[in-house]
Image 1 (cartoon, rainbow, N blue to C red):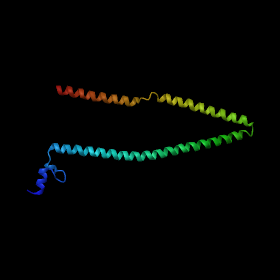
Image 2: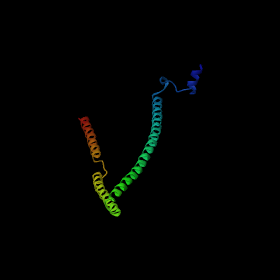
Image 3: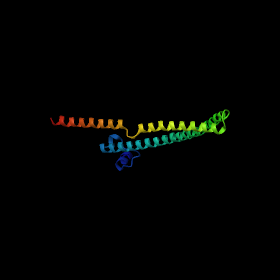
Image 4: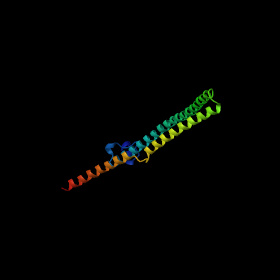
Length: 153
C-alpha cells in the first residue's frame, strides 16, 4: 500500500480529506465549523474596530467638554465686561443686579422651552416602530392564514 492510502485509512492525513471523499454529514459538519469560525473572526474584528472608534469618540467628547468649559469662562468674561460697562452709567451694585436679573430671565425662558421639548418626547415609546411591527405581524399572520386555507382546498 502507498503512504497516502495508509494515511486515509488510519485517519492520520496531514489535512482534511478531499470533498469528493467526504460524506454529506462530514461536509455539513465542516461547513458549520467554518461558519462558526467565520462568525467568531468577524465578531473579533468588529470588537477591535469598535474599541478604536470608542477611543476616538472618548477623546472627542473630552475635547468638547474642555471647549464647553473654556466657552463658559469666555461668556463669564463678556458678562463681566457688560456689567462694568453698565457701571459707567449706574452704581456697580445696580449694574450687577441688572445683569443677574437678565440672566435669570434667560434661564427661565430656556427652562420653559426645555420642559416643552421633554413633554413632546414622553413617553419614550417608539410609537411608529410599534405600529410598523404590528402591521408586519398582521401581514405575516394573514399570509400564513391564506397559505393554510389555500392548501386545504
